[in-house]
Image (cartoon, rainbow, N blue to C red; front, side):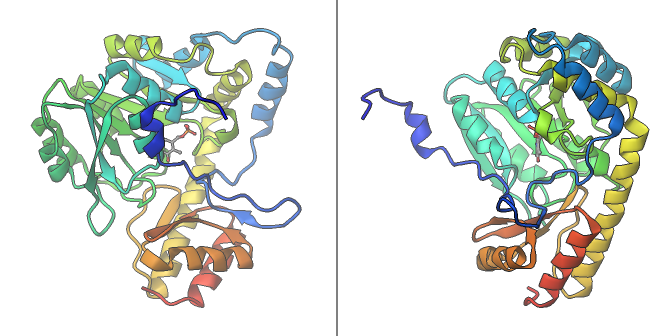
Length: 355
Ligand SMILES: *Cc1c(COP(=O)(O)O)cnc(C)c1O
């Protein structure tokens, strides 16, 4: 038994619960982690194999070529782009770069389960503002929750796991209300799936507001969850701070090449996103047609607010060969995957009690 004390903050750290995986050898659709159901494109696999030849070397620490390609794609300065080992890691670096011990970080709740962990590890204190009954950020209440201790507000749009995106007018009003020295992180992990015409253009928001940082990822629309590449878009001074707080060589050479190849294949990958958006519509329509109450989804998942029935419903799904993500006592998140997975999910839902 080691006597080495651990940080007190770890004692109350919520555990990140990964989406369950199919038992080895069992056939099941894994729609528990918001992954892209499509395998990597041949051009991306080729880039990965190419990169394998050089793994005795450290990667380019600043991911220069990838940063340049992202900057060109988004029409921002390369100095504004900071890559990291998944946008979850980048968020950690953002928080470490700006939070002093005890500072407050305001977030919606329920939102992305990585947030409370990242905030606590950064030595800050999370302040949770409940989402509305239809799973939307209550941006007015979030603005009202900002105090002189608030250093950061996390805005997850679309919100994982409830689904809706924030609207441009309410975000503008929110940014007007929040002091200029409070960092607003707009987490756009699912931005490519957004079709709500009222949703904001993150890049325009970033251009208009020096205290806004965007977080984006190659894990969802680009299908590279297994290679861990995400990035922040921030004003150069903030970006330099985030870079300084980052793990050196956080993005592997293989991951950098795969992300570059994915940007080159953007059209093909966005066509897949379009198919997933179509499948999302089929899933939402099917559930609502059965009488279920499902919030709007602008992401690659839908949320079933099942309350105490969440765990039992997830178990029924598993028995039917679809693995979903229950949040005990609250709801079930179902990722949009293969059409066969949608069919199975709708079958289980049809046999369950709509609430
Ligand atoms: C999936 C997700 C991310 C991205 O995670 P990576 O670390 O880039 O794989 C970030 N934010 C939210 C809200 C997510 O759901």
